Length: 119
Image (tube, rainbow, N blue to C red; front, side, top):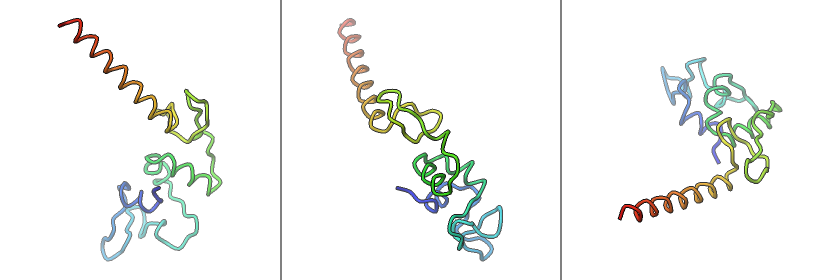
């Protein structure tokens, strides 16, 4: 499970480990607020551009800071259970794995029937 700091160091375009003698440098200010002393820091760029890359972390982040999680909660199309997801996701993690397995099986069967007809 990733933390905010891990996501920032891996994905944030404004973050540099060190620049001009400043460690944890942020192009939007002198230092990245997540590496400072604040207990629950907030950064608008991080919340809009970096955080959506990890839906589970985004859900936890918003819940900790008592921000709206309304648009993050989805209902699985298959099992109808609620899960944290983005606009593209339709299935929870368990159903997503099962669906891929079914699609792969269907695809293999279709390929077998096509090769049997052509032979």
